[in-house]
Length: 290
Image 1: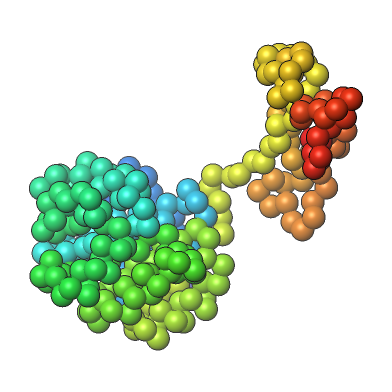
Image 2: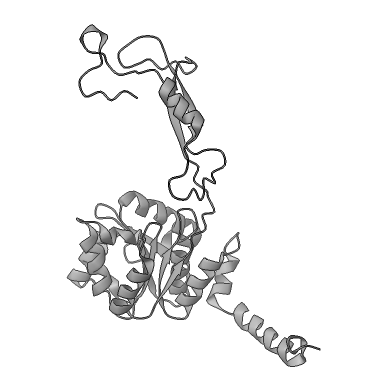
């Protein structure tokens, strides 16, 4: 019998499974219709242990699940969660998602020109609204436990970035911050700054793209299948949709300077020029062709 098969080891493993089944994360799993990925597990566990998190993962990987777990923790503890986004359209979308899960009585929306149930335990808002609330000392901040900052890479925006920075700095010390981004490139460095400003912060990075990006190019062709008329008049043109990279290139990991699809290069050379012509049939000044 190995040490792993000993009664003591089996008992310890059983106790660990029982403890895991009683966590808030175990409760949260029950409302999901899909299993959590590893990076989601790690980020949620860090949240339940009382740490802030920075999650950097590709678009479509499911980062917002971590923000939704923060909402779950707030409601389970009888406290508040704010979910902030950079634009009203995203706030409206997230508001609809959370209403469907938790009900209209538990979720509010604040976007500057729209106020719905602003004193709810869960409020979706633009980041500017939260910044204004912090400076005004709003009573709505009482009982706040979690703030989710979706698209936190806006911190690097020259004009709007200070809003994100001010929110991160001025949030009360006992508020856990959940920072989500698909495009932040210096996650570890950013995480170090968050730890300095906010305290214990776990950085979770996932580079796996569950929804691969396939890049194609639409090239004009002499085939009039689509019936597209050139800008300067003349017979209708069609279009061919071709892969950007050569066939042996993995589009999900093309590497540096991958070879271009030779069929695409040939199509570029053969594509009819559709710009307006100048006097004598010559192309207008500054026209670069296709």
